[in-house]
Image (cartoon, rainbow, N blue to C red):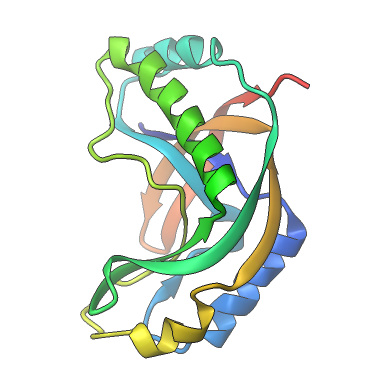
Length: 180
């Protein structure tokens, strides 16, 4: 099974703001479905059922307190002239808190042989671009500082990802709640 550690976006105000943004941007890209908005703290990849149980046991040791993240700004990976992903970012403080949480996940999973292939950058993917569409700087120019709302981060999840022709289907394997 294919798995990753994530934080879901659950605030309906944010979800509606992102959907509005997706509808306003006129580019040839596949919008991420609203039930799939999340921060990926760490992508793990293909694992066995046995390994998933070990990962669950390890992740349950993570302790953190809930915090708020202000979602704002729009960016592109790898760059606006050759876009593959359009994402929404965070405020500095919330982003740093997410980085700190991703470090806890990384530390707990390293003994099991998993480490991230690239540094964690706090973002929510909102569009995936499969074909070459050229420079989209103009389309995103007035959205660079757009605000989407505040998400309370109160749990992290181990999620299973099933790839289908119509897009990924995510299901929860484990939820770790913040200390109150």
